[in-house]
Amino acid sequence: IVNQDKTSPVVHTSLVTYYSLNYYAQENQKHILITQNPLSMETLRFIGGQKQGVNTNTPQLWLVDTEKWTEAEDRENALKIIFDRYSVEKTYKADRISVSLLKQK
Image (tube, rainbow, N blue to C red; front, side):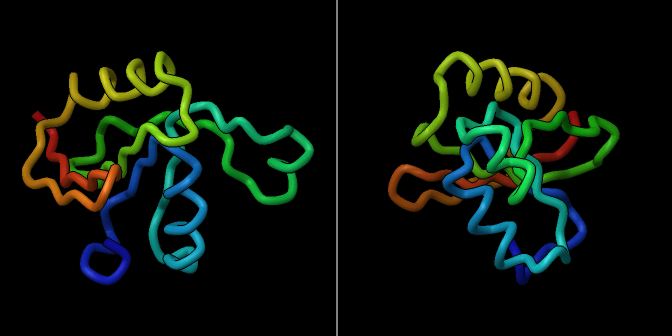
C-alpha cells in the first residue's frame, strides 16, 4: 500500500496495523483509525491515533482489518459503515490481517 498507492487513504480497525503503517508511510499517505484506541488519552496526546471517521466522498480507500486489539462491537459498527458505502475490489490476506481495496458503490 505504502509504495503502490499513495493517494488513497488507509483505514485501520486496529492500532496494531495503524501505528506501523503510519510510521512507514512517513506522512506520505493518510492513515485513519476507525475504532476506539485502547491507549490512555495521555499517550494519545503524544503519539496520536484517536478514532476518526472516514470521508465518504473519497472514491476509493484501503481497509486494513484485524480483530487483534479491538473491541468486537466497535469494530463491527465501523465495518458496517464502511461496507454500506464501499464494495471490495480486491483483498489480500496475511495471517489474521486482511487488506482490501474498496471503491465507492
